Amino acid sequence: MKAIAVEPGAGEPVLVDKPRPEPNPGEALVRTLRVGVDGTDHEVIAGHHGQPPDGEDRLVLGHEAVGVVEESNGTDLEDGEFVVPTVRREPNGTNEYFERGEPDMAPDGQYAERGIVGAHGFMAEYFTSPAEYLVPIPERLASLGFLVEPISITEKAVEHAVASRSAFEWEPESALVLGNGSLGLITLAMFETVLDIDRTYCLGRRDRPHPTIDLIEDLGSTYVDSRETPVPEIPSVHEPADLVYEATGHAKHAFETVDALAPNGVGVLLGVPEPWEFDVDGGRLHRELVLHNKALLGTVNSHRGHFESAVDTLSQLPESFTDDLVTGVYGLEEFEAAFETGDDVIKTAVELGSA
Image (cartoon, rainbow, N blue to C red; front, side):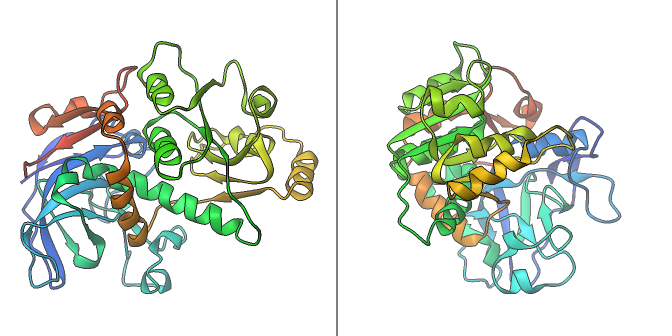
Protein backbone atom coordinates (compact mmCIF):
# COMPACT_ATOMS: atom_id res chain seq x y z
CA MET A 1 0.00 0.00 0.00
CA LYS A 2 0.99 3.63 -0.42
CA ALA A 3 1.81 5.85 2.54
CA ILE A 4 3.20 9.35 3.08
CA ALA A 5 6.17 9.37 5.42
CA VAL A 6 8.95 11.66 6.53
CA GLU A 7 12.35 11.42 8.08
CA PRO A 8 11.92 14.12 10.77
CA GLY A 9 14.11 17.08 9.92
CA ALA A 10 14.59 15.98 6.30
CA GLY A 11 12.19 18.68 5.18
CA GLU A 12 10.08 16.79 2.64
CA PRO A 13 7.42 14.08 2.99
CA VAL A 14 7.71 11.26 0.46
CA LEU A 15 5.45 8.56 -0.94
CA VAL A 16 6.54 5.09 0.21
CA ASP A 17 5.37 1.50 -0.13
CA LYS A 18 4.48 -0.38 3.05
CA PRO A 19 2.82 -3.74 3.65
CA ARG A 20 -0.91 -3.59 4.24
CA PRO A 21 -1.35 -4.10 7.99
CA GLU A 22 -3.15 -7.09 9.49
CA PRO A 23 -5.43 -6.42 12.46
CA ASN A 24 -4.69 -8.15 15.75
CA PRO A 25 -7.52 -9.46 17.93
CA GLY A 26 -9.59 -6.51 19.12
CA GLU A 27 -8.46 -4.38 16.19
CA ALA A 28 -10.23 -3.38 13.00
CA LEU A 29 -8.72 -2.77 9.58
CA VAL A 30 -9.68 0.67 8.28
CA ARG A 31 -9.45 1.93 4.71
CA THR A 32 -8.36 5.54 4.89
CA LEU A 33 -10.44 8.18 3.15
CA ARG A 34 -8.97 11.57 4.06
CA VAL A 35 -6.26 12.89 6.40
CA GLY A 36 -5.92 16.54 7.36
CA VAL A 37 -2.68 18.50 7.46
CA ASP A 38 -1.96 20.89 10.32
CA GLY A 39 0.85 22.80 12.02
CA THR A 40 2.00 19.76 13.99
CA ASP A 41 2.68 17.92 10.72
CA HIS A 42 4.86 20.80 9.56
CA GLU A 43 6.72 20.76 12.91
CA VAL A 44 7.38 17.02 12.51
CA ILE A 45 8.57 17.50 8.93
CA ALA A 46 10.94 20.27 10.06
CA GLY A 47 12.26 18.13 12.91
CA HIS A 48 11.03 20.43 15.68
CA HIS A 49 8.71 17.82 17.11
CA GLY A 50 7.99 14.10 16.93
CA GLN A 51 9.92 10.90 16.29
CA PRO A 52 9.46 7.63 14.36
CA PRO A 53 8.72 4.31 16.06
CA ASP A 54 11.73 2.70 17.72
CA GLY A 55 14.14 1.22 15.19
CA GLU A 56 12.70 3.05 12.18
CA ASP A 57 14.01 6.04 10.24
CA ARG A 58 10.73 7.30 8.87
CA LEU A 59 7.39 8.18 10.40
CA VAL A 60 4.10 7.83 8.51
CA LEU A 61 2.42 11.21 8.94
CA GLY A 62 -1.16 12.12 9.75
CA HIS A 63 -3.23 12.32 12.94
CA GLU A 64 -6.46 13.91 11.62
CA ALA A 65 -8.12 11.04 9.79
CA VAL A 66 -11.40 9.54 8.68
CA GLY A 67 -11.88 6.13 7.16
CA VAL A 68 -14.25 3.23 6.61
CA VAL A 69 -14.04 -0.15 8.33
CA GLU A 70 -12.74 -2.71 5.85
CA GLU A 71 -12.58 -5.65 8.28
CA SER A 72 -14.37 -5.41 11.62
CA ASN A 73 -12.45 -8.52 12.74
CA GLY A 74 -14.90 -9.60 15.44
CA THR A 75 -15.13 -6.18 17.10
CA ASP A 76 -18.37 -4.31 17.81
CA LEU A 77 -17.82 -2.26 14.66
CA GLU A 78 -19.42 -3.14 11.33
CA ASP A 79 -17.83 -3.49 7.92
CA GLY A 80 -18.57 -0.32 5.95
CA GLU A 81 -18.94 1.85 9.06
CA PHE A 82 -17.32 5.27 8.89
CA VAL A 83 -14.92 6.03 11.74
CA VAL A 84 -12.50 8.62 13.06
CA PRO A 85 -9.45 7.40 15.03
CA THR A 86 -8.23 9.02 18.22
CA VAL A 87 -4.51 9.78 18.41
CA ARG A 88 -2.87 8.57 21.61
CA ARG A 89 -1.83 4.97 22.28
CA GLU A 90 -0.09 3.14 25.12
CA PRO A 91 3.70 3.30 24.63
CA ASN A 92 4.70 -0.13 26.00
CA GLY A 93 1.86 -1.77 27.82
CA THR A 94 -0.87 0.17 29.55
CA ASN A 95 -0.71 2.66 32.41
CA GLU A 96 -3.16 4.27 34.83
CA TYR A 97 -4.13 7.07 32.44
CA PHE A 98 -5.19 4.67 29.70
CA GLU A 99 -6.87 2.36 32.20
CA ARG A 100 -9.01 5.31 33.37
CA GLY A 101 -9.86 6.31 29.81
CA GLU A 102 -7.83 9.52 30.18
CA PRO A 103 -4.91 9.12 27.75
CA ASP A 104 -4.97 12.87 27.10
CA MET A 105 -3.87 13.47 30.70
CA ALA A 106 -0.82 11.20 30.48
CA PRO A 107 2.47 13.08 30.94
CA ASP A 108 5.22 13.14 28.34
CA GLY A 109 6.85 9.74 27.95
CA GLN A 110 3.76 7.75 28.96
CA TYR A 111 2.07 7.70 25.59
CA ALA A 112 2.68 7.40 21.86
CA GLU A 113 0.85 9.61 19.36
CA ARG A 114 0.05 8.26 15.94
CA GLY A 115 1.69 10.32 13.24
CA ILE A 116 3.58 12.39 15.81
CA VAL A 117 5.57 10.54 18.48
CA GLY A 118 6.59 6.89 18.43
CA ALA A 119 3.78 5.46 16.27
CA HIS A 120 2.94 5.60 12.58
CA GLY A 121 0.11 7.88 11.57
CA PHE A 122 -2.91 7.45 9.36
CA MET A 123 -1.63 8.90 6.07
CA ALA A 124 -1.65 5.46 4.46
CA GLU A 125 -4.19 3.61 2.37
CA TYR A 126 -4.98 1.33 5.32
CA PHE A 127 -4.40 1.35 9.06
CA THR A 128 -5.37 -0.83 12.01
CA SER A 129 -6.58 0.31 15.40
CA PRO A 130 -8.11 -1.13 18.55
CA ALA A 131 -11.85 -0.70 18.24
CA GLU A 132 -12.09 1.44 21.39
CA TYR A 133 -10.05 4.14 19.63
CA LEU A 134 -12.36 4.32 16.60
CA VAL A 135 -15.28 6.75 16.87
CA PRO A 136 -18.23 6.24 14.49
CA ILE A 137 -19.25 9.17 12.30
CA PRO A 138 -22.33 9.45 10.05
CA GLU A 139 -21.68 8.92 6.35
CA ARG A 140 -23.03 12.41 5.58
CA LEU A 141 -20.16 13.91 7.63
CA ALA A 142 -17.43 11.57 6.41
CA SER A 143 -16.01 13.96 3.81
CA LEU A 144 -15.20 16.41 6.64
CA GLY A 145 -14.30 13.77 9.23
CA PHE A 146 -10.68 14.90 9.31
CA LEU A 147 -11.92 18.02 11.15
CA VAL A 148 -13.12 15.95 14.12
CA GLU A 149 -9.65 15.70 15.70
CA PRO A 150 -8.99 19.47 15.80
CA ILE A 151 -12.55 20.11 16.98
CA SER A 152 -11.98 17.59 19.78
CA ILE A 153 -9.01 19.64 21.00
CA THR A 154 -11.31 22.60 21.55
CA GLU A 155 -14.01 20.40 23.08
CA LYS A 156 -11.51 19.45 25.77
CA ALA A 157 -10.25 23.02 26.20
CA VAL A 158 -13.77 24.35 26.76
CA GLU A 159 -14.63 21.49 29.11
CA HIS A 160 -11.59 22.27 31.26
CA ALA A 161 -12.23 26.01 31.16
CA VAL A 162 -15.78 25.51 32.38
CA ALA A 163 -14.59 23.09 35.07
CA SER A 164 -12.10 25.67 36.34
CA ARG A 165 -14.98 28.14 36.87
CA SER A 166 -17.41 25.60 38.32
CA ALA A 167 -17.11 26.95 41.87
CA PHE A 168 -19.27 29.95 40.93
CA GLU A 169 -21.78 31.04 38.30
CA TRP A 170 -19.87 31.69 35.09
CA GLU A 171 -21.53 32.33 31.75
CA PRO A 172 -19.00 33.78 29.28
CA GLU A 173 -20.39 36.57 27.13
CA SER A 174 -17.15 37.47 25.35
CA ALA A 175 -14.34 35.36 23.95
CA LEU A 176 -11.01 36.08 22.30
CA VAL A 177 -9.20 33.61 20.05
CA LEU A 178 -5.48 34.24 19.61
CA GLY A 179 -4.52 32.95 16.19
CA ASN A 180 -6.34 32.84 12.85
CA GLY A 181 -4.95 29.53 11.68
CA SER A 182 -7.31 26.62 11.03
CA LEU A 183 -7.61 25.63 14.72
CA GLY A 184 -8.31 29.22 15.75
CA LEU A 185 -10.95 29.58 13.04
CA ILE A 186 -12.62 26.28 13.95
CA THR A 187 -12.71 27.39 17.58
CA LEU A 188 -14.15 30.76 16.63
CA ALA A 189 -16.91 29.03 14.66
CA MET A 190 -17.67 26.85 17.68
CA PHE A 191 -17.86 29.88 19.96
CA GLU A 192 -20.17 31.70 17.55
CA THR A 193 -22.49 28.96 16.30
CA VAL A 194 -22.41 26.17 18.90
CA LEU A 195 -21.67 27.85 22.25
CA ASP A 196 -23.53 31.02 21.20
CA ILE A 197 -21.11 33.40 22.91
CA ASP A 198 -22.39 36.94 22.41
CA ARG A 199 -19.22 38.74 21.32
CA THR A 200 -16.12 37.15 19.84
CA TYR A 201 -12.77 38.45 18.64
CA CYS A 202 -9.95 36.80 16.70
CA LEU A 203 -6.36 38.03 16.72
CA GLY A 204 -4.09 37.67 13.70
CA ARG A 205 -1.32 39.30 11.69
CA ARG A 206 -2.83 39.43 8.22
CA ASP A 207 -3.32 42.29 5.79
CA ARG A 208 -6.65 42.82 4.11
CA PRO A 209 -7.93 41.37 1.89
CA HIS A 210 -7.38 37.88 3.29
CA PRO A 211 -9.60 34.77 3.29
CA THR A 212 -9.21 34.18 7.03
CA ILE A 213 -10.35 37.73 7.79
CA ASP A 214 -13.35 37.17 5.53
CA LEU A 215 -14.15 33.97 7.44
CA ILE A 216 -13.85 35.77 10.79
CA GLU A 217 -16.18 38.54 9.76
CA ASP A 218 -18.63 36.21 8.01
CA LEU A 219 -19.03 34.48 11.37
CA GLY A 220 -19.98 37.82 12.93
CA SER A 221 -16.71 38.11 14.84
CA THR A 222 -14.30 41.05 15.07
CA TYR A 223 -10.84 40.76 13.54
CA VAL A 224 -8.02 42.24 15.66
CA ASP A 225 -4.69 42.95 13.94
CA SER A 226 -2.02 42.38 16.58
CA ARG A 227 0.29 44.88 14.82
CA GLU A 228 -2.25 47.60 15.53
CA THR A 229 -3.75 46.31 18.79
CA PRO A 230 -1.44 44.08 20.85
CA VAL A 231 -3.08 41.59 23.19
CA PRO A 232 -2.69 43.70 26.37
CA GLU A 233 -4.46 46.62 24.68
CA ILE A 234 -7.51 44.66 23.56
CA PRO A 235 -9.51 45.41 26.75
CA SER A 236 -9.17 49.17 26.24
CA VAL A 237 -9.77 49.11 22.47
CA HIS A 238 -12.54 46.50 22.51
CA GLU A 239 -13.34 44.81 25.84
CA PRO A 240 -11.80 42.29 28.24
CA ALA A 241 -12.68 38.69 27.43
CA ASP A 242 -14.33 36.16 29.71
CA LEU A 243 -12.58 33.38 27.79
CA VAL A 244 -9.27 33.58 25.94
CA TYR A 245 -8.18 30.70 23.69
CA GLU A 246 -4.48 30.82 22.78
CA ALA A 247 -3.62 28.91 19.60
CA THR A 248 -0.45 30.61 18.40
CA GLY A 249 2.48 29.10 20.28
CA HIS A 250 3.77 32.66 20.74
CA ALA A 251 5.23 32.46 24.24
CA LYS A 252 4.48 36.06 25.23
CA HIS A 253 0.80 35.49 24.61
CA ALA A 254 0.60 33.17 27.61
CA PHE A 255 1.40 36.12 29.88
CA GLU A 256 -0.43 38.74 27.83
CA THR A 257 -3.57 36.63 28.14
CA VAL A 258 -3.78 37.64 31.81
CA ASP A 259 -4.13 41.29 30.77
CA ALA A 260 -6.77 40.44 28.16
CA LEU A 261 -9.01 38.58 30.62
CA ALA A 262 -12.03 40.05 32.34
CA PRO A 263 -12.39 39.53 36.09
CA ASN A 264 -13.27 35.86 36.79
CA GLY A 265 -12.08 34.97 33.28
CA VAL A 266 -10.07 31.97 32.18
CA GLY A 267 -7.35 31.65 29.55
CA VAL A 268 -6.67 28.32 27.86
CA LEU A 269 -3.21 27.77 26.41
CA LEU A 270 -2.76 25.32 23.52
CA GLY A 271 0.23 26.60 21.55
CA VAL A 272 3.59 24.91 22.11
CA PRO A 273 6.40 27.50 21.85
CA GLU A 274 10.09 27.08 21.23
CA PRO A 275 12.39 28.12 24.13
CA TRP A 276 12.41 31.90 24.49
CA GLU A 277 13.60 34.09 27.35
CA PHE A 278 12.12 37.54 27.90
CA ASP A 279 11.30 39.90 30.77
CA VAL A 280 7.96 39.62 32.55
CA ASP A 281 6.57 41.69 35.42
CA GLY A 282 5.71 38.64 37.47
CA GLY A 283 4.43 40.62 40.43
CA ARG A 284 1.85 42.46 38.36
CA LEU A 285 0.65 39.27 36.68
CA HIS A 286 0.41 37.55 40.04
CA ARG A 287 -1.72 40.39 41.39
CA GLU A 288 -4.00 40.29 38.36
CA LEU A 289 -4.60 36.58 38.80
CA VAL A 290 -5.29 36.86 42.52
CA LEU A 291 -7.22 40.12 42.84
CA HIS A 292 -9.45 39.48 39.82
CA ASN A 293 -9.99 35.72 40.20
CA LYS A 294 -8.43 34.99 36.83
CA ALA A 295 -7.13 31.58 35.78
CA LEU A 296 -4.74 30.12 33.22
CA LEU A 297 -4.67 26.48 32.22
CA GLY A 298 -2.82 24.41 29.67
CA THR A 299 -4.33 21.58 27.67
CA VAL A 300 -3.18 19.13 25.01
CA ASN A 301 -4.76 16.24 23.11
CA SER A 302 -8.25 14.86 23.79
CA HIS A 303 -9.96 11.57 24.61
CA ARG A 304 -12.75 9.54 23.04
CA GLY A 305 -15.53 11.50 24.74
CA HIS A 306 -14.20 14.72 23.22
CA PHE A 307 -14.13 13.06 19.79
CA GLU A 308 -17.74 11.97 20.20
CA SER A 309 -18.74 15.53 21.13
CA ALA A 310 -16.72 16.80 18.17
CA VAL A 311 -18.76 14.71 15.75
CA ASP A 312 -21.91 16.41 17.05
CA THR A 313 -20.25 19.83 16.82
CA LEU A 314 -19.15 19.19 13.24
CA SER A 315 -22.77 18.55 12.31
CA GLN A 316 -23.67 22.02 13.63
CA LEU A 317 -21.00 24.06 11.84
CA PRO A 318 -22.35 26.08 8.91
CA GLU A 319 -21.69 24.51 5.52
CA SER A 320 -20.59 27.90 4.22
CA PHE A 321 -17.90 27.98 6.91
CA THR A 322 -16.48 24.52 6.22
CA ASP A 323 -16.57 25.18 2.47
CA ASP A 324 -14.36 28.24 2.94
CA LEU A 325 -12.18 26.66 5.64
CA VAL A 326 -11.08 23.68 3.54
CA THR A 327 -9.07 25.22 0.73
CA GLY A 328 -7.78 22.03 -0.86
CA VAL A 329 -8.17 18.23 -0.87
CA TYR A 330 -5.47 16.45 -2.88
CA GLY A 331 -5.05 12.89 -4.10
CA LEU A 332 -1.91 10.79 -3.70
CA GLU A 333 -0.68 11.82 -7.14
CA GLU A 334 -0.49 15.45 -5.95
CA PHE A 335 -0.10 15.03 -2.19
CA GLU A 336 2.76 17.56 -2.04
CA ALA A 337 0.23 20.34 -2.62
CA ALA A 338 -1.45 19.52 0.68
CA PHE A 339 1.74 20.55 2.50
CA GLU A 340 2.19 23.85 0.73
CA THR A 341 1.67 27.07 2.64
CA GLY A 342 0.60 30.45 1.35
CA ASP A 343 -1.83 33.29 1.83
CA ASP A 344 -4.65 31.39 0.14
CA VAL A 345 -4.15 28.19 2.18
CA ILE A 346 -6.22 27.62 5.33
CA LYS A 347 -6.92 23.90 5.76
CA THR A 348 -5.91 21.06 3.45
CA ALA A 349 -6.23 17.29 3.37
CA VAL A 350 -4.88 14.30 1.48
CA GLU A 351 -7.47 11.96 -0.05
CA LEU A 352 -6.27 8.36 0.03
CA GLY A 353 -9.50 6.65 -0.97
CA SER A 354 -13.14 7.22 -1.85
CA ALA A 355 -16.22 6.17 0.05
